[in-house]
Image (cartoon, rainbow, N blue to C red; front, side):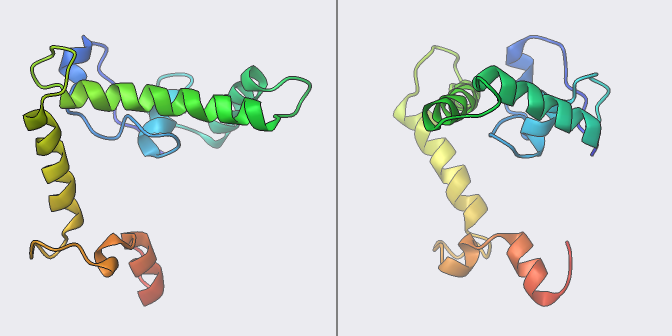
Length: 138
């Protein structure tokens, strides 16, 4: 898997970039699992990164429910922090209604695939699901 090269500049320059948040999406793979920072994640890197994350969260080679939830909470908190920074357009540490509504509008527009002003159940089904049903991959 190839990752976008991450800029090493200040966080404000990174703002608005996609693919660097989430818990286990492509951006998360790149930001957490590209251990040698070459812009690619090999299977060996992914295995090593997951092992490190598991070992940090679990004790004695297992994760109990609380440890698992703590690991998930940490990932969610980091992702939420990045999302908040992207939405806070004026960098004042607060989201105005206008900033929040702009994000919600972009989300709605992205989900409304046929741009008719309505989100239907078929528009919420993943594109991968559609590709698999038709026999095509895309």
